[in-house]
Length: 109
Image (cartoon, rainbow, N blue to C red; front, side, top):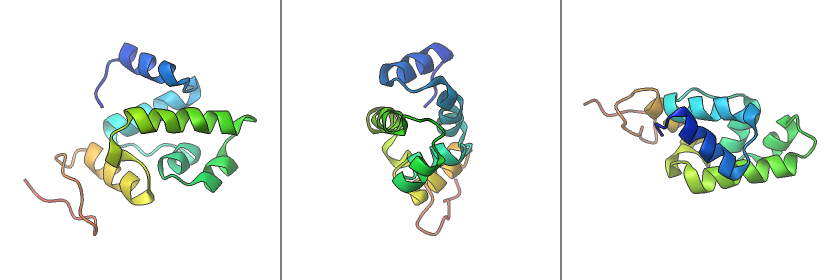
C-alpha cells in the first residue's frame, strides 16, 4: 500500500481511524514494521488482547472503525491471524514480495 500523505489521511478519515493509530498502521502496511501491542492484537484478530490493550474508554468504537478499515482497505493477507501478520511483515519488509510458505520459507528470486 504505497500512498502519499494526503491519500493516507483521506483513507483513514473515511473510516474515522484515530490519529494516534495512523502512523503505526502506515508503517506496518508500507514497510512491514510491527506496530504496538494493541494494533498487533487487532491485526491478528485477537479480540481479547485488543480490548485488554486498548487505552481508550470507548474501545468498541475504536475497534469497529479499525476493523472496518481493515476489511475494506487492507490487503487480504495482511491481517486476520498471527500467521498472516508474520507473513506480511516479512513480505512488506522487502523479501521480494514473495509470501512465505507455512514454515516461514521465502522463495529466492
